[in-house]
Length: 509
Image 1 (cartoon, helix red, strand yellow):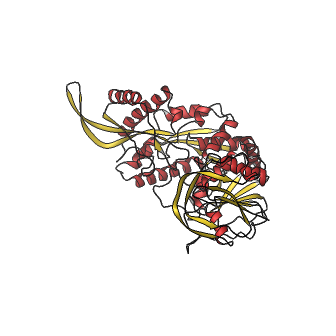
Image 2: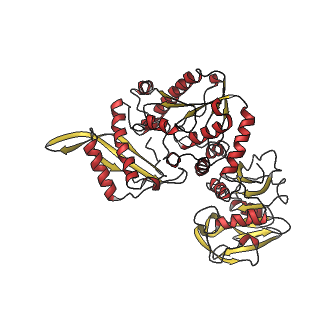
Image 3: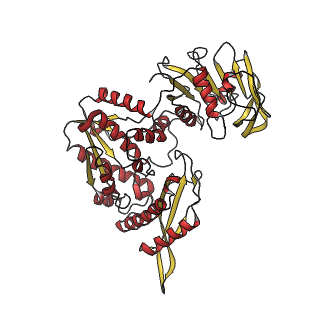
């Protein structure tokens, strides 16, 4: 990768968002922890210092080694980065007298400054800090202010170093993308060559060189990531790619057959394996969510291992790992606390003796979709909602039985098909139904019923890290509820989940 941008992470919740905004400018960038720089810095044409939950005045303040960067490549210091350069560069950082969180507007911008080209006084920015820069560092010149923040932006003369005390990467900074473009393109001279087509050409060439005539086995899920990974690998090695699509009995209604049919005509070497009974047997009597995940993961490995042994001389395991997973594993604070086991099997055990190839490991989810579109993958497949690896097992609260799976498959089909028929599917990031371990009294005709309750869930999000419930039309919810209760035997009550993430998660287990 040439013309890279290096983003140094100081633990900010916004660091991934910086990277996404840079990628939207068709510029390749990578995130590294501030204390674990890449060995070769020669390919980087610019460096961005991220924000941080820490204070530069604290004893635990992160201290980056900028000796190989400062004055040698253009630097953009964001929030904590700006305060760090000030505090340890002859300036002064102190607690702010006013809370500097949320929306603010630029009240002063230095004239004839390329950093603020096409940005006007009054432009809205997003603040998020409790400290503020009282005195600029040695050699610094103020570039912008807000009504509450005197030193909202500055540059250091004699260097190509710029700093801001607001977050250009968030949606609420209306000219944030313009500011990043001014710095990266106009000032740092970074080429805007990071496009889906270029990624495909470069990745296929790299895969051909890396894999040669080796055989690769890949587990398809029917989802976006594994499908795009399969098509990329197929472009590189053709019939040496062996795809396995396992039916764990916990897919959506008719999904095993419909997904296999979708793969027809894509030129992929796909084998469908129906192991429904094996998974359901392994789940019998288990109601703990983590134990369910572990049981599914274990059986998947067993099935996958059995199938892989049917292929002679396989050397590689293909995976649809994407960049957020990679970032998490090398983050400043290490992997986050486990809220739940990862939806997908994270690699295979040592006894399989396979090397791993991950063609999407530098892409965000939205980039995966754009790459898939550039390769001509069916838009319906690329637009599919995310679906958890354990499938309906974590949408059935309590133990798993074939009858419960049947009920939830029918409910889910009515809900998802209804979203499509009403033109709502593409306005929702993820949707699904949950079978609750609750029976409630109902009346159907002249008879009293005591049947299951189901919850419907629909959220909007960009990456699943945060999410908000979707305000679906009452008329849609009314019809969907009526259809479910009238058509699905065993259900007599429907509720709608209006929880956001956080504090709730998207899935219930």
